[in-house]
Length: 356
Image (cartoon, rainbow, N blue to C red; front, side, top):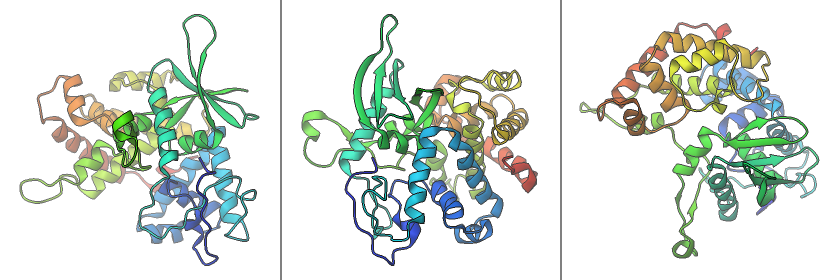
């Protein structure tokens, strides 16, 4: 993933622009603080947000370093920013791709995007997992069998797996000497939002190309719409509330759960029966407490729509069908849920958002 299409960077290129174009904004904020030593307030001024928002991003990715793939990816990106010479050699960059950020948006190399997309398509099947070990230079896609040994589907570069984990496209199902990963809700959303291939081979294979960061949640889509009076359908604070809920959902390790009603999620949290490794550092425990408070405040209905749209990234129409609601009622319920959610977060102090 990180070893393709290396482009030399000029010595006067800003450090954060030396990172590959697919790197999420939250990772850039985290590395600006940890690798470059920039203060939280300085980053908040640059981002135009409160320092507590930056703090949440930093703590979120610090806690995610429990995942070995995420930790390795962050370590390699950290080395890029710390290197004395921006135009590093290939060995010094640990095979990380360096893109010259001469445009506002940088597309990922087509072959890299296709490789990730093929991997996600396999992982979208219930019996497929991605397996990797600390001493493995490659990752392996396996198809689990009810009887007998798992069957190997394909082998891919470990860098691809690291990038997918960092972007939250896959989630760790089992830790140990051998790690196994499954597709995450964000990975399924990215798979659904993959655009058509441009160029050769489209007619023959019917494959689709994905642009990293192209996956949009239902909230992002609704945020661009306007009502009959011309006002935005969702206020900025409602969109921010949805993002905060998603952050806590991932940090609480709830993304490994199958889609479930509010009462089932609350029961799993209260009984500490969340599927997966259940590694619970302070940040994870704090996020789970905040999720419990939010779900109790929203209750069934509002909470169900918030979880499906903000966390599991299910489309509004699909949620309406599964919940048995009338057509076009879902977006209204979601807006009400986000309004209550924004008031819930507004009543919290900065200390309540501390990750530890």
